Image (cartoon, rainbow, N blue to C red; front, side):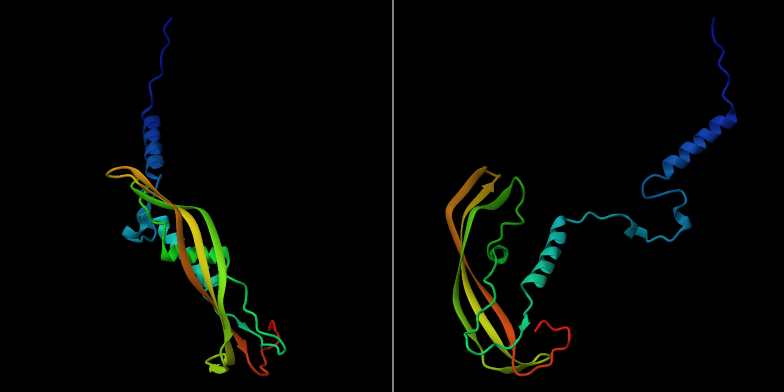
Length: 198
């Protein structure tokens, strides 16, 4: 026996189409009701940004926070030679090497360069203190200089993908980077306040 299908009501079909229209138009960035609120026009469309710019900003902040500032230390105590702060860390040496001989920024599958088996030697070249002078916003102070010669030994691998794919391997590459660690020592009886470290 054959079944009888009930005829679709026009109201049901209309409400289903209206619901489908509302659901489809309210997905994504634009809706039917987009004109009701404030609009920023063309700037509401997202623009892809390379991660290079994010990494560049993070590296600049890292260098400023760790290596670009000059500390102001207490006066040099009498009876012994002034000793410089810590020698450059491996991170500081590798960042200086990246500025001198960059490996970042290659084109994948066309031209890439990387370093393997990195060895770092650090040698102090000089360590001396300047005579007293007056620095603006600081007062009388002595500048302490420490100069380091950092030699980096590494294997450099360059991969070229076009027009003739080949790999260049320099197993005895080396680079010399000079790093200065300068800081100030206060001179005299200076009131540094209650929250000072010295």
